[in-house]
Image (tube, rainbow, N blue to C red; front, top):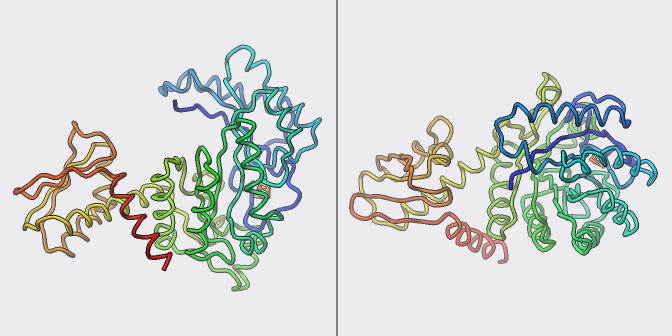
Length: 366
Ligand code: SF4
């Protein structure tokens, strides 16, 4: 069931140092000092907003989410104080659970007991990469072993586990990003977020960039790597709940992002690229006619067409066909019908993804 997230930002709380890419003030915006009063004020504001929301999830399955810091690295008494500020909301049924994000090297079994006691259900780990060289160059201060150990510990204690990864950090390559996805899959997280690295002002990465010692991914490359990652996670039944940073007002302020693959609709660009690959695969593997049509679910139509009709233009030119992409109200997301006026073929997205990722694995294994 979809959750109504009540975000409470605790910028850098618990962080032992600043990671090279991180500027929480710009990602989350300026936040008042974290204390019980400001936390409650934030939660009350979001609850009153939910009353006028049209989302059904706004009335049930509400989750308070502590973002922007390393929650479990905060001293235990302070963690308890913060969590206890939510207790009466949980008791009254106004809020259902708590989520928090933290580092993979700062969780002990003892700490987990406290989190359980106060209603924490979901823990998101900032993993970024499973390549130790990338982690070290990004000044993360933890290793890939820390990620594996902590993810197992969280699973053993029945927490819902989310993993955040960041392709394109210093030292990262296409291969090491894909290897990160493969290693994360082995940990069986409940969900993943992918944030391609962007250069934000007032960060260590910005210094490196300005000295010419770091070059971020281009948007084109980021779409390429996120596409393979998304395909791999999806074929392994791991939901990718976000691709790309949220375009908050402070992040999109002029001069904040110095360079990198930031796009407010990055997920759509990635989905559109997958739709292009899917249609190309179908055209190549079926009888070619001068005119072909694809029927998709209405919700996926724009992904298939692509921004500025780019997918239609590319395929028409590559295969010398004339093409239509039409919404079919009967079709559910996850499948597409190919019609060449000679035969109609239904293809499931998942079957295509399995073939594509199998092919990609075979290529990279050689
Ligand atoms: S641990 Fe997370 S919040 Fe803290 S500095 Fe690093 S990336 Fe930012």
